[in-house]
Image (cartoon, rainbow, N blue to C red; front, top):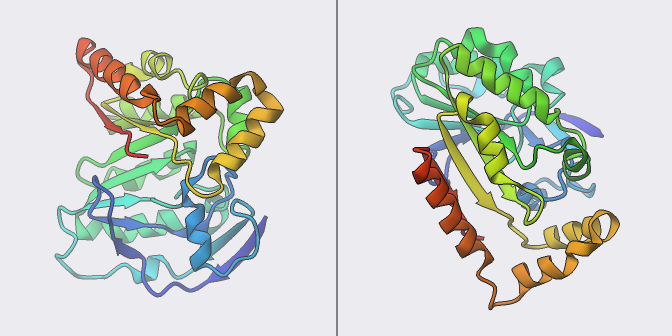
Length: 268
């Protein structure tokens, strides 16, 4: 893993996401090395020749870029993070996210954190200072075997669910991001069943296969799940496929029957 210390020009960036007004990415790049990562498009802006997932730029001045006085972000939705994880393993050393959060408190935003790490529990003392922050975890499977193959350097699913439970017990608003959904691999119903006592709402997304993402997924299929190749070719390449439309109907019906709040993002 190549780690560089850099100085950023800005840290709170206007968002194009439907559920956030602004985003903060304390790091550029990511050490998780997920084969399905859509954020690899960021590489074209970084000047890095290395493969996405093999480098991280640490924005050492990130916390200093948070304004000391302004009403601009009051009651605005700020997401940490959109193209990295705010709790990469490097966060233990650099504490960028922790210091950013400290400086955000006085700006009174509507805070949203999305991560794959239980390290977020370290910052409970700071998170309590925000007005109803939303804290969510990403999970694509309950099987650790698939987790290790698809997102090599992430925290175990078991520890994510334990952290989700702990946050709920402490009174935080929690959510689960189930995505990207891998056909025949991601059992979204089982994930919901296991986590619904600790989860206020769900977000579900299908796979974005743009660029070289499908190539990497296909290589994984060849190595670990060759029996699924024909299914994936049909689902993703055949215009006759109605797989995602059918899944969306199933999810909506299940959530309605179980009185669960869910947002579905099947736009890819």
